[in-house]
Length: 137
Image (cartoon, rainbow, N blue to C red):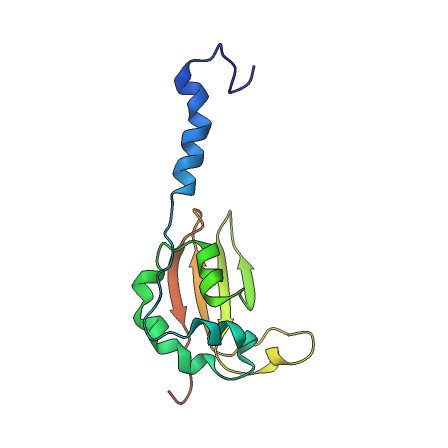
């Protein structure tokens, strides 16, 4: 017997579709952020061009807009993360470096420099946004 078997009540047959709809409806798309140059941020992979620290203030000013955004929308805005940390269950953290450092060398080693970190909860939406202090700013 399958979920789509005619012998099951209609409510049971619709349950998988309803759950899929609920999960797909979680989160929201990211609107444009005033003053934030997303193409410049995306082009500065690993912060090796030294542009991200200057681009950070408008992004942090719009921090409330980032909450509940989906991972795909964050990637569309900021580009793929420089590092991704997988946590328990389905949680993860995207890290974006803010200043040039060892991560700009061959094989992109992990560095302890300042980073923007976006934590995604079990539903795949942003639950926390943190930025390390940037020296001299």
